[in-house]
Image 1 (cartoon, rainbow, N blue to C red):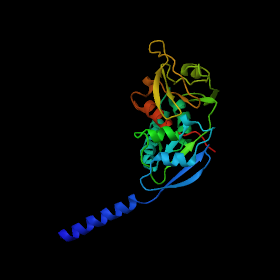
Image 2: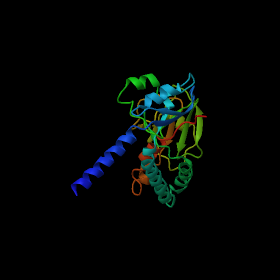
Image 3: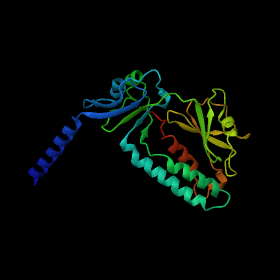
Image 4: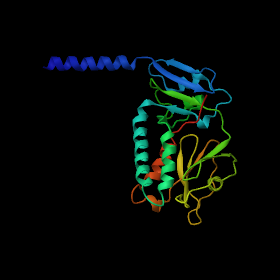
Length: 250
C-alpha cells in the first residue's frame, strides 16, 4: 500500500516538474514591433514577452492590458450577477427603463480576463512585484492612445467626448443626457489602467477634481435609493466589471 502511494506521489511530482519545465506561449498584439505568439522559456516572467514584442512609440502604456485565462471564471460570474440584478431592476418602476438600457450595454461587453498590471517593458522588468510569472495562454494588448472619454451607465446613450486634461468627471457627465434613475451624488471613474473609484459630485460630497487619462470611462450609476433594497452592490460591481474591459488594439 505504501509502495503504491509512494509511486503515485512520485508520478505526480514528475508530471508537475515536466509541466513546469514546458515552454510558455504568450500572444502579444497592438502597437508593437513584433506582434504574434512568443515562445518563452520555462519560468519566464511577463516582462520577457513585453521585451520580445517591443512596444513601439505609439503604444499607450496606461491602456496596456494583460489577459489571463485564470481570471475569466470570476469575471464571468461577475457579469452574470450584473445581468441578473439588471433583470430584477428592469421589472421595477422608476428604474426599469434605465436597467433595461444598461443590461443591453453590459450584455455586449466581453469577459476579458484582464489582470491589472504595469506593462511598460523595462519598468516592469525592474519591479519584481509587478513582473509576475508568465502563463501559457497569456495575452498582452498594447493599444494606441485614444483622444476621448466615454460616459456610460444611466444615460440616454453612451457618449464619446473629447478628452481635456482640465475637465472633471462631473463635467463630462453633464455633457451626456442622463436618465431619471441616474444618481445625482456620485459617478465612478475607471482609468485606462483598470483602476476605478467612486467620486462624489453633489454639493454635500463633492471631491476635488481628479484628472482623467485619455480613454477613461465615467460610469453614471443608478441612484442608491432605487437599488438599495434589491441590488445594493450593483453600482460597485458594475464599475469593477467595466475595469476589466480593454481598449481596442488592431
